[in-house]
Image 1 (cartoon, rainbow, N blue to C red):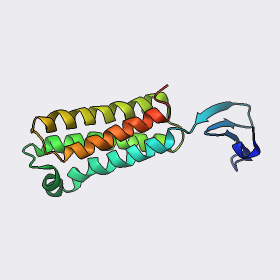
Image 2 (cartoon, rainbow, N blue to C red; image 1 turned 180 degrees about the vertical axis):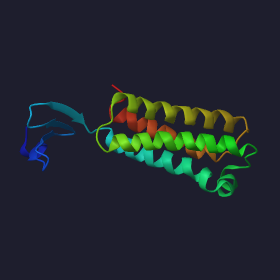
Image 3 (spheres, rainbow, N blue to C red; image 1 turned 60 degrees about the vertical axis):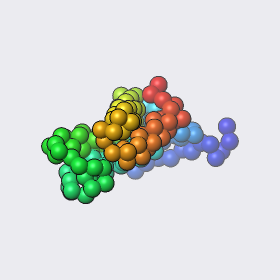
Image 4 (cartoon, rainbow, N blue to C red; image 1 turned 120 degrees about the vertical axis):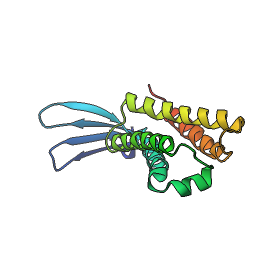
Length: 153
């Protein structure tokens, strides 16, 4: 192991932090320790931000959202999906601050796959605007990023 691949630091809280590559070993002075794998933090942060922003948009200003994505006869339903997207985004952002457990990784992958599937299915049938295919590309990119970083393991 090269010196630049590992680092040891003591935080003000008294915790020792030993990092090797993208995995950190946190240990407290009372003897407890746990591994924190940071591979997924960046993906969770990007997807969380994207889901939070796109989820809040129809809540804050439905007319501009409809101007870009097409008419919305059921505004309440658009807002409900927006709130769910924002909730998932918030969860991903909170997890990205510390560690991203397998359950949150699955949430990220499953939600990206679900949005991509709906986008492609209904855009292909002309039930929603083709602009949703742009979102589908973003969702597939997020799904690929999760896989590149190691999947849900």
